[in-house]
Length: 202
Image (cartoon, rainbow, N blue to C red; front, side, top):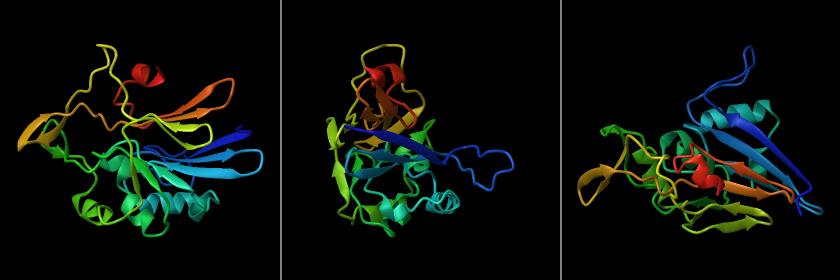
């Protein structure tokens, strides 16, 4: 049973006014989970670059080498851009959808996927645990897996990928969230919620 949960923002589009923290487009959350007899630390997403995560974590007295696992919410650069350089520093499992390395575009020719030169290096690593179904990665901590699209008002717009040599609309099935069961409530951690926050909450 989880006794305490702490979530700290390592990277976001904005930083507090007059703070020493760096801001960058994207997100990265440092999640500390305390159980009765042990602790687990999860990094959820890696922002656009490792440098910002490294700087802000040092500023916040967070030791990245104590991370037990990484979760990547989806394959866009502002969520997985810092992953390669981080994995050069630590060796932990990375939970992600198997299509995070596909080509991603916005309307429809601007590339927004994980940097291609990073992908070449990441594909050589054995850290990845690819998931399509919900998975309990630590006690009471679950990844969502692929989120069923059960309503008609949450639509993925302006996202594209390549399939069979053709540019097609991307349904963003890699969109992955984290559910932390606190007993009386569920704490939800999401990246961009491309799957739709109502769908994710179900």
